[in-house]
Amino acid sequence: MTLALAKPGMGPGMSMNKTGKTARTETTAREDVTPVVTFIPGAAPVRRKRRTRSWLWIPVVLAVVGAGYYGWTRYATNPTTAAMVTQVVARGDIENSVTAIGTLDAIKSVDAGAQVSGQLKALHVDIGDKVEQNQLVAEIDPATIENRIEIDQAELANLQAQLVSKKAQLVLKQANIDRQRNLVAANSIAQSTLDQAVADLAAAEADVNAIEAQIRKQQATLAGDKVDLGYTKIFAPMAGTIVANPAKEGQTLNANQTTPTIVTVADLSTMTVKAQVSEADVGKLKVGMDAYFTLLGQPGKRFAGKLRQIQPMPDTENNVVLYYALFDVPNPDGELMMSMSAQVFFLQSSAKDVLIVPSAALHVTGGKAGGQGAGKRADNAGGRPGAAGGSAEVTVVTSSGALETRTVEVGIRNRVNAEIRSGLNEGDTVVVATGSDTPASAPRGSQRGMRMPPMF
Image (cartoon, rainbow, N blue to C red; front, top):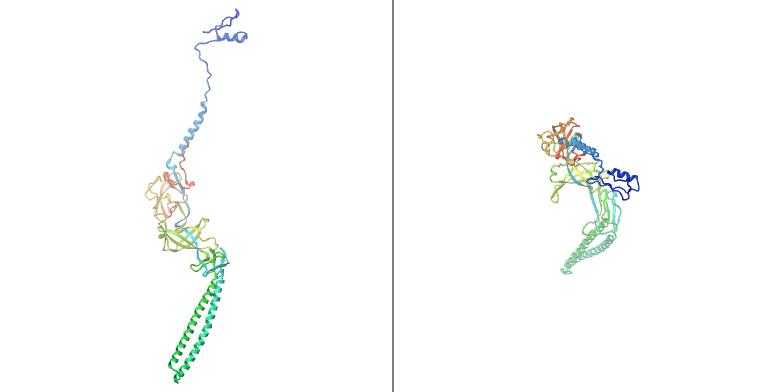
């Protein structure tokens, strides 16, 4: 129902319209006519419908589904072959050795010290200087000893003068006793006078002997002081290099209780390696076996020698018993220095240009084929690590990607690699670890087919 209202005063020609459309038309046609308000009971407002954009998410959903399907088919289709660490069999060198930590020292060194007390007057060498045997290296002020020598000489001269006097008295006493004997024979004097002359002669001989003894003592004292005077000059006891000079020029040295060291001379042409070997490994060492060491600054260079001595008396540190094993190495260029730390290797066995696989790839003979946790790891395959000989099994990846188990003959083996004498060829691919056995330290290049983390 439509109701049209007209403003009072409308003319007779303006009648009420029955439709809203006629009223709106007349309102726009004549500006002086009051707008017509139309009421439509029960009618709801009309809203414009929004255009949906849900179709934009369709490509995103398809991309996510495709990526998830690719990841699943690529990395999770065969978990047995995906989580494997493999390595190619190659040729190389292998050795089994006892390792130890050692320290370098000179093969021979001597401390040149002061045997007399006094002030160090001059030091003629510095650390690093090369010296010859009997070369003058230092001097101690000789003034005190020279004064003692002068006193000794004066005392000796005094004793020698006393000796001359005593000998003259002895001659006189001897002549007197001869006269007394003649007088006694002629009954001119009493026998007591002769007896006194005999006693005087004996006393004179004793005086002469005493002075001669004092002279010998003084001569020894003088000789000792002259020796001490010679000790004021310190000479190199051997040819070598000055490696230390604890005493400084101008320092006062006291040699009454201990011998102060002035310089240390060492022969650095040959160095001795003093290695600490645990009691568990010392039984593996034999005098004459090959040995070598590397330095911290030159890890790729080897310095070789032969085991010379195993000292029977060990050192105990924190309840650990360590024996010292010594061997010598030449040092013609002087690149080896005292107290250097060395990583020492005592060779038990070695081989060059042989087939090598990781020790972790070996399994005890009789394990399951397929490499999926196949048997027990061959910690004892071919014997304990380091032993030679024996057999073991390895899992090989064939050219088609299949896994097969082969029995191999093991040669030298250490904790890292093992020599394969038969059963494998150069270029074969062996399984080092599978699944949870994957070692954290496995080389990146050998981790083929490792399971990728889920992408989504």
